[in-house]
Length: 297
Image 1 (cartoon, helix red, strand yellow):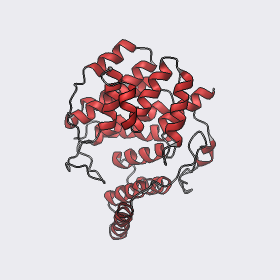
Image 2 (cartoon, rainbow, N blue to C red):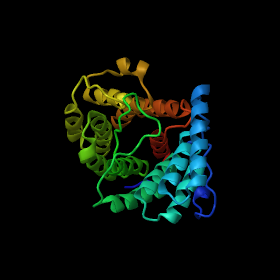
Image 3 (cartoon, helix red, strand yellow):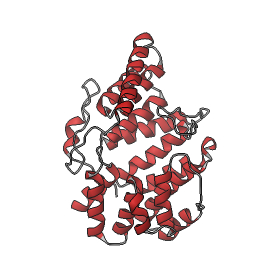
């Protein structure tokens, strides 16, 4: 059964002509604050934004101008403004799966999950039959290597966002589809999709299948980005204990531990971990937030 997310964000469900607001609280009411960037990082992000604004002024007829201005706003956690830019772009390019993909991502960050899912579903339909391409990163990884493709990312984020509304079958299907796209046959994608497949299968009560998924992911992988997901996968496999994991855990691997406690009935321990996870992050962590809302029911 899908769960309905009805927090204070109902006031944001407005028509496209009204400016979106970036949310300032998580789903459980803790504050969302600006990330603690280092001064050099903040200066670079601001400079990138000014460049994107200049490009928009010079070339407002180009789809990429809207994509990059919106993304640069998003990197500065200005998600409502980013949604506005993508929406404006979609008025000019109504069949842009790229703009839908990015608007969906920023709607999800703004805790507007149903709208995000609608964008992803439409984007998934539009991208079928179109040659896939790599999705350029705005913040490059250490190897300067693109890891995601448009088609794979659309299905991946459709699956991930479906978690927020309790549609675990859609989470599973999205991750399975994301994993098989030809351009993303690498270990980083395998680890991330395996992480969410495991959790979705366990939510669906298919515990043996979940274990098979993570057991098939080898030890000793050399990853580019998804190191924290890999810690979670290794915890799921049983090759990394909670005691060994937690001193180096990030958001995703902490969520992995909390969810295993929750699924296996250690509710108080799970709830405590989920609350600490949300409150300890400047931007919150919406998968944990939706789990906490569910526990209130």
